[in-house]
Image (cartoon, rainbow, N blue to C red; front, side):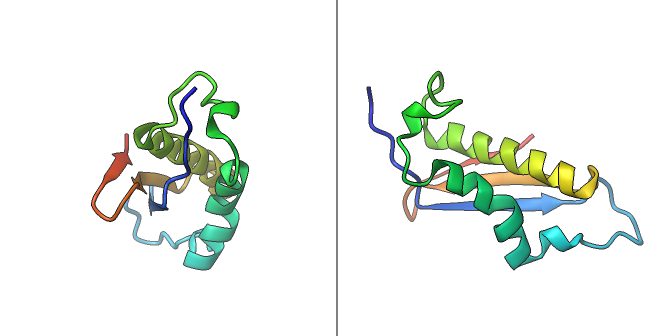
Length: 106
């Protein structure tokens, strides 16, 4: 079984589902609040864990590409619940090194 290490950084961008003149960014999407309410639960679930022992990585290789998709899916689900579907994740980038990244988007 291959060892999987946690990537060094994650970047997640959020977008309104459609441009609306009176749209305001929900409180959950301010920088500090976003980190606390959206990203932190996802990071906490995998932090200091053997990724190969956690779903979905028991069946899926915990590569940077698959981690980017995992973060994308998990944060999208959280944002949909918090904003009633008004805000979604635009893309998610996992940084393995200073020059190596994997980005997932739909």
